[in-house]
Structure formats: structure tokens, C-alpha cells
Length: 453
Ligand code: ARG
Image 1: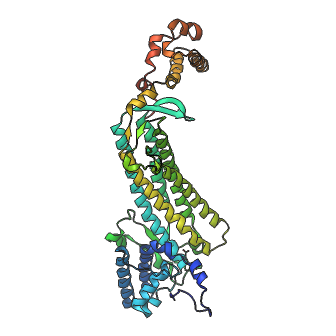
Image 2: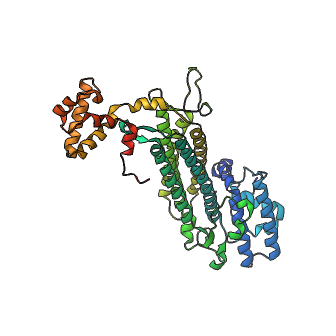
Image 3: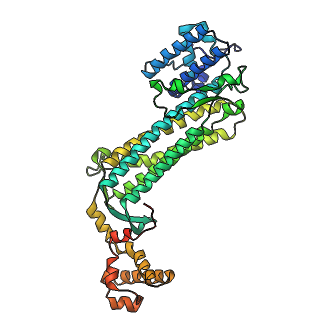
């Protein structure tokens, strides 16, 4: 029977079904290294508050470092019958140090511990995700630098106006930059507090909980923390143990990342179809069909699109789980972990695989040029031409609308319509030699001067 952190008031042993149902160790083991940091700090606090002798504090600190090493080397074995990671680490200490380890839980509760460890996990994971975001952005920048081309732009998925590829994909870089900054903001706002106990605070003076982690975080094993943060005494212990806003904010920010990546995936899926044929996705990033031998499918992109649903679901699951909870800690809150950890894991994989796919993407420039021959892409440029020559915008819009209709009804390209018809039927402002110049993608994109580059 695994040792519990509670049990004194119980006469009966826990039903095995309850053991199984209650535990979180199978997913919260990921918090091990963060829980250890909390324990190391707690040892210092207990020593300063005279609940531990210097000798006891030293042996606890040494043993915590040993466990920390084994966690770093993946040799720390968790007992999956033990309720959670906090219990596992406490039991590992007890096995080594006996009585001394029993003093460690003075003035703390797993309710406080779990928030502390989860916040540190979040800060570290945000740093890593932001590296992945930066790498994907860099892959996009490289791709457009290698492909200085113009493509049709769309609204309502209909040909709209020509745009630079660098602007089209640059829009995704802008989204990724906002994602990066949103996560940095959330991380900075996330206050790491101690001293809540179970809910009501502890008998230790708040000044003992003012701790600068700078020294601890200088150690190589904490290198994934870019930001040095401080630990503060809680200013409201009830809020500290029952706040999961940070979890909701992070999953929300990650859901936005997922939504952006899903849109990128969708664009690339459309571009890779026979009908569009704008791009060739590298075979290393495609899969085949068990039945149709010709197939080269964009499964990776479809999964990126599909996982966006999982992320939104994760967000809704935590919001819904929290909305009816009275203060303070309730066991429901244990269920924030899988959506949180799962969201980080999915986004990290998506960002990495998309960076690989983008790096190897090829553009079918000839096909794109074919699409750019569609005259409708330049209709707005003809409107601007008329406006520049003195026509009111609304009239110019109507004239060009009629011109487009004439072209469709009479199966004649606008470029082929004789100048006298253009003048007679549509506008005397039309000069054919000038109109013809407008059907050029580069002329079209370069005439757009509003964009600050
Ligand atoms: N495993 C728990 C969680 O993730 C830790 C806190 C448990 N506290 C308690 N009083 N049962 O939320």
C-alpha cells in the first residue's frame, strides 16, 4: 500500500476504485522538477523560521538535489499507486531520511504546492514554445526570401487582387508575433506566491516568503528560464490556492496559436490541390493512401487543422470546470492538468512540424502566373484608373462592373475590347494603351502605397 500524505482520521483503507479514480500521478509526474524547487525553497523557509535545524535543512536539501538529479536523468521512478507527484517526492524523501522528512510538510499543503509547481512548469513551457514560434517565423521569412513572387489574393475564397507572397505569409508572421507577445505577457503577469498553506495562510511570517530565485535559477538545470522571477508572500491565500486564471489564459493563448496554425494549414491544403497547384509539399511531410496509389496527402496539415478543435475543447473544459467552484481548493481543479499539458504538447509538435514543412515547400511559379492572368484580379485597378482620371469612385465602380459583365457575356477579354467600344459604351476616360498596362501583377501590387514597409 502506497503511503499517503493523509490518513490519520481514517479507520478503513481506501477502496481500490477510489485509489484509481483519485490519482493524478500518471499525468502530474511532469511537475516533478518544479515541485522539487518548491520543496527546496520551503526547506530554507522552515530553517529561517526555526522549524528545521541547520543540519536537518542541509540533509533535506541534499536529498532533494539527489532526487532532482534523478528527475533530470529520467531515473526517478514514480510509484504509480501513489496519489500524485507531491506524495511521490515526499515518500522518496521519507525512504531516505526517515523522521527528518516528516517535518517538511509543516506549513504547507498540496493546494499551494500544486499551484507553485504548475506556474513554474508554465513559465518554462512558455519559454520553450516561444522558441518554437520564433523558429517557425524564421522558416516563413526564409521561404518568402527564396520566393519573391506575387500570388492572387482572395476574399470569400474568390479572386480579389494580386498580393506579394511575402505579405500573404507575412500575415502569419504577424499572428505568430502577437502569439509570442501574448504568452510573454501572461508569463510576466503570473505571480509566484508561497505561504497559502491549505487556504488560510501559515504561522510563518510573510517576510520569510520574500525570496529572490536569482541564485537558484543560475544553476544550469534551470537554464530554460529566461526570466528571473521572485517569489512573493501571498496577499490573499484563498485566492492563491483557488486561482486557475493563469491556466485558462495560457490555454486561451495556445488556442489562438492553434487557430492561427490551422488557418495556415488550411491555406496550404488549398494551395496544394490540383485545382490551385500553387505549391508542392515535400514528400517527407506527406503521406499516402492504402488504396489509391497516386495519392500524396497533406495529413500533417489536416492534423494541425484538426487539433485546433482539441485546443478549443481544452479551453472550454477548464472554463466549465472552474465556473461553479466555491472557494477554495476543490478536487475538480486537478482536472486542469491534462488540458494544460496536452495543449502545450500539441502546439509544440505543430510548430516544429510546420517549420520543417515550410522549409521544404516549393512554389509552382508557372501555375501561379497562369492564375494571375485572370483579368478579374485587376478590376479594382481599372476603377482606380478612372478615379485618377476624374471619375467619382461609385460611378467608376459601376462602369467597371458593367465592363466585367460585358466581357463575360460576350466571351471577350477586357484587354481585347477595342478602344472605341470602351469609350462609347463605358467611359470616354478609357485609353486602351493605359488600360493594358494595368493587367500586370507587379504594376498592381506596386501601386498600393498605403502599406508602411
Ligand atoms: N493532485 C492535486 C491537484 O492536482 C494536488 C492537490 C491535492 N490537494 C488535496 N487537498 N487533495 O490538484
